[in-house]
Length: 296
Image (cartoon, rainbow, N blue to C red):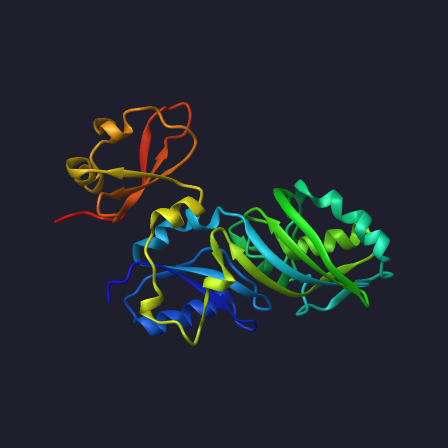
């Protein structure tokens, strides 16, 4: 089966993203290539964008968007994994509502964040969590992330429900840990639900049981814009030239020097052809980031 496109799945708790992808792939057949754009931990649920066929090569564009979460934090206890599945490693007093409200503003905007040691980040060619499970010490460097919005929805019995909009690469488990430390406490996540990934929201997601091949979508201008891409329509010979991978400098539509934004390319019928991106500096030319259609 030659399926290409993407689907927005509402991942349930209790499944890793990899396991969910396996169940989806079995519904589509053994020859369908599948991937996902942004891992959700086993205890977490919500929006998971799955990619099929050649769309798997566009994962960077689907992952580079803002993510939104509803996170339930518990104070007074920190676990090794910073989630409900790990063993307790530290305890501290539960903060007051005033302490929590005073701490949250310091996490808005650009911050440096240390990822959890129980993460899939590579350290010396091996995933961090694999090293930790072998008893090896893992020290991960802080990374720059951005918290666009951080709203306290409720705080009761040492548990806080917060709503977060953040950049790619943000670990909400680390955010819970750091907020608790800023309050003079310790903390971890009890539950996490991704409510949006870029232009994709829970309202448009489908459950695993309801998923089938008819739920697979193609790139269109609305989706491309939601992913932060500009849209460009090519006519006639230019569309054929783009699909065949001919030098972009020969195409009038790409004669001008690019800015910093990648472009989703469509033909006059609205069919998605691919993505063009600026070449790395100091070049001032375009390059093919991805080409989908190649007419026979």
